[in-house]
Length: 190
Image 1 (cartoon, rainbow, N blue to C red):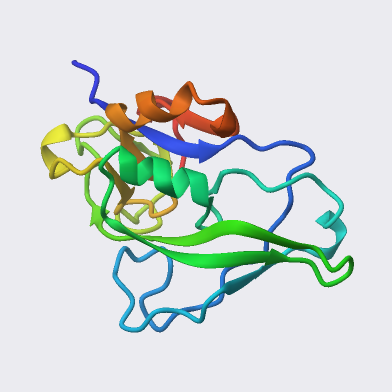
Image 2 (cartoon, helix red, strand yellow):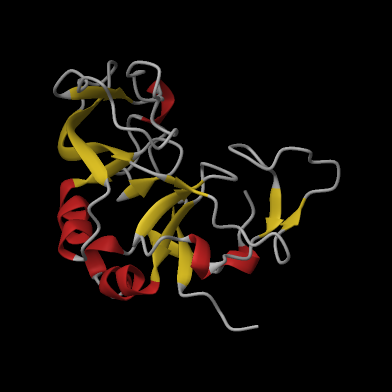
């Protein structure tokens, strides 16, 4: 079988990475539903740091658990042609130390795509769900289902963010994004 030209984007976890609180809710759409918000969130969004992690290093370029990106990554994605996301100014703030980090955006990736190949994707035994929160042991992406998008959330498991190889090539060699990790679909577990 020919390799699909897609990988999954993750942040490599470091021992000294900040642990961020979930983003504030925005209406019923939520940050992982792939829908545009009816009204934009307050600006800037304040993203809290879990207190015991305030002294740790600067957060990663991208966090899949909190859809937060550095502004230079947002600009790089737009330069790659990714246009199906909305970015909202965000400030990372710590209550205990008064920490305040600017230069971040909360990112709402628009569009959920059912791109998992039914024949090639392996689900965890006993997993009934095949939409939004499926437990995937090994993913196979069907390029015919991707609608040509360069970046999208996987509809089968919305924590999976899929990027086209052209986006990967544009980002992976840049030193400012060294904390990004690209995972081949068969190696990804969601």
